[in-house]
Image (cartoon, rainbow, N blue to C red; front, side):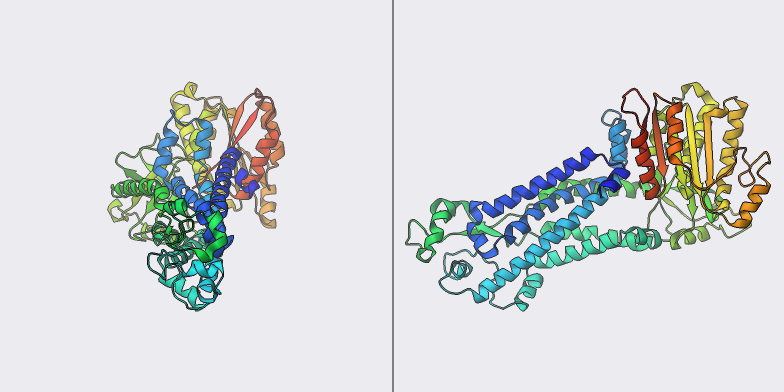
Amino acid sequence: MSNWMVNEGLSIIVILVWLALNAYLFWNFYQVYDVGERYVYSRQLYGSFLALARAPAACLNFNCLLILLPVCRNLLSFLRGSSACCGRSIRRQLDRNLTFHKLVAWMIALHTAIHTVAHLFNVELLVDARVEAKNGTIQAVLTDLGDGKNETYLNFVRSKVPNPIGGINVAFTFLAGLTGVVITLALILIITSSTKTIRRSYFEVFWYTHHLFVVFFIGLVIHGAGKIVRGQTFKSLEDHKPDICIHNFTEWGPTNPTCPTPQFAGNEPMTWLWVIAPMILYAFERMIRFYRSQQKVVITKVVNHPFKTYELQMKKKGFKMEVGQYIFVQCPKVSSLEWHPFTLTSAPEEDFFSIHIRIVGDWTEKLAEVCGCNKTEFQDAWTLPKMAVDGPFGTASEDVFSYEVAMLVGAGIGVTPFASVLKSVWYRYCSDSSTLRLKKIYFYWLCRDTHAFEWFADLLQSLETQMQDRNNADFLSYNIYLTGWDESQATAFTLHHDQEKDVITGLKQKTLYGRPNWENEFKTIGSTHQSSRVGVFLCGPENLAEDLSKQCIANSSADPRGVHFIFNKENF
């Protein structure tokens, strides 16, 4: 997991602080219930499982406080855009919001498992104590408390139904048991439907089951309302010292001034105190999203591209964007509930915003159909479907102009954030190149299929021509790699290799075959820019992120004045 976290760019400091807080909470609450004076008698019934149940419960509260914050996208965009509180290093951590969200989710799953297993043992022990405790033992005395007058119970199981029926009764007749079952099932569905395979192949399943978080949080807040975990009251501790009275439990009673009958009470539910603030923040987040989704969006143009890709150009009053940002899109004609994220491929300088969509599932296919992508005749704008847009939201690509040197690496449709970047570079360069801090771009695009290059080649041709006309062709160095081809294609490529322009893209820069030797690429760039900070931006798969992350570390100089490669990965 540590390699994955580093590959995703999450700071090791952030991870260590988060893990340390979890460890502190676990140990602190474990000690409270394992050696605390209030729970001396509770431990006689529960054994060590009481502490094993309560310690992860504290960690669950902490992580449930955190789980919603990384998905408050408007809050993160506000923080990201605030130069007063967010320098480059902090912004890079905010860009890893979904990585942290996943880590917190797995920690919630871990503590839920420990908490659940421990309580299964607790219920079995309490049911057995109520049914089978032998007279004359402290367990029998403690479990019978509450049957007489002026007594408070310690064992919340009051019926004498043996296991397993007794345990099932606890699970489905007590609030804690019932809510525990519900929130555990909700968590299982949320996590299992969040796997990469489900997200990519059955996004609708992921989308709908993820909204079970509402059920999870409601159940979590009321889970402790039954106060079934009980300890000796503080007032009782003044009159009844458990370290002394535990040895003469047969003499407890109202007539014994030294050891009167101990009194017990349940703990006040505390979860709501942990989660109320993030729940309110997230409620505001959803209200902002709803308000923005009601604003009118007009599709001005639909463009069919090769490789099952189409482009939607849209306009929305007051819409402002930065390079590389993304939006969430909903089409009520396709689904009134589903929202899907797409990177903006337009530049801030253009009077519209656009997204490129590849048909990879039911939703994208239906959207293409209602947008008339399968029609050849001209369509009037008023016939196009109504769209709702939420965003834009910030990403790592926004920082590309804060570096003097940038490496942009896109894989397949992952090139879309860099369409926005390169367009904006073109506009700014045409306007006034002297204001650009960015002096050099190295662009790499990896694709499996030759058709995938076609929709992006026009932009590269424009940039290539523009830079040559301004006698600055070295500003943009681009390398296009074809990672998949057959023997007949290889023969055709060989025959046309000597032509002035590339046979696939029409560019002067020839397409390369295979995959880049990243070690050589980084060493070459590092030797060319020996005292620069090089921003490395990736939109692509995790295995490529791993390779680039390792190369950034390996090729960065130990000298603060030397070259440093800063890895940034798109996450949305």
